[in-house]
Length: 116
Figure 1: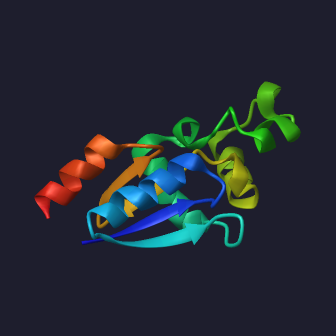
Figure 2: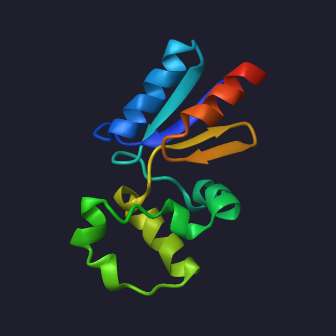
């Protein structure tokens, strides 16, 4: 079993995800969004499963700095913004084969580990 974790080193939930998989000896590939933003194709997997609103972190500092509180954007424009501004994403984004999660989802990850 191998997972891919998208997040930032400063994000507490991302560090919890890394620790969760590390403690269970699951190989995790970490992608730091501050260094390498997620591609449009990578984000589309999450958008198709959860929708754009689930990926937007309305509590993030970058969201406030960009003045997005009153923004009314289409899903296409939000997706373009998320590609350009990865610090607006809700993290961690975790992918394992065809399974995906947004945010801290330890109970679901535990089912993945138990099923492998």
